[in-house]
Length: 187
Image (cartoon, rainbow, N blue to C red; front, side, top):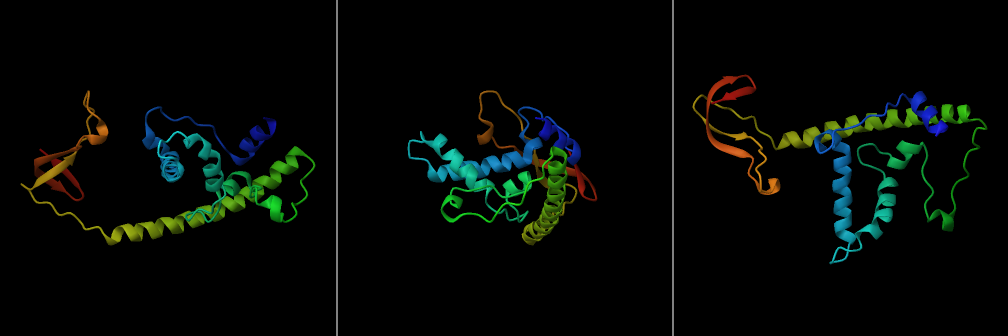
């Protein structure tokens, strides 16, 4: 506990909380959940009763796989080193560096290593973000509206007794009456 608190202080980590039932504030977590759900769908049996047996193996695979956007594994980003894998029992691993003898030295060394890894990951994420934007922009066109045009309005509503996943959140046949640059007011 003391080591973790010291690491948080040195690394400038603040504990935060998010709002319950508001998944938009947890984008990375929701993206991970989608990945895990997709992997589970591949491995579970037809009756879906063995899903919990697969989780440790899928988490290990996820945490030790190099991610396209960061060019690092989540384990390395979290711990500052790669984790030992079951395959390492058969083939061995390169020798581990000698660990510092005090908690302060260990935290200081870990901080330097994590800063270097995170700097590299941030650069790689910017490159990946630019690449994704270019890929997205290829298929987009600029919408041009004129006064009197009929448009659709995205207006999600919660309706009692109806599944929100099966509800159309778009309202049609709204008439555009004012246009300012990119923002449109509708009547």
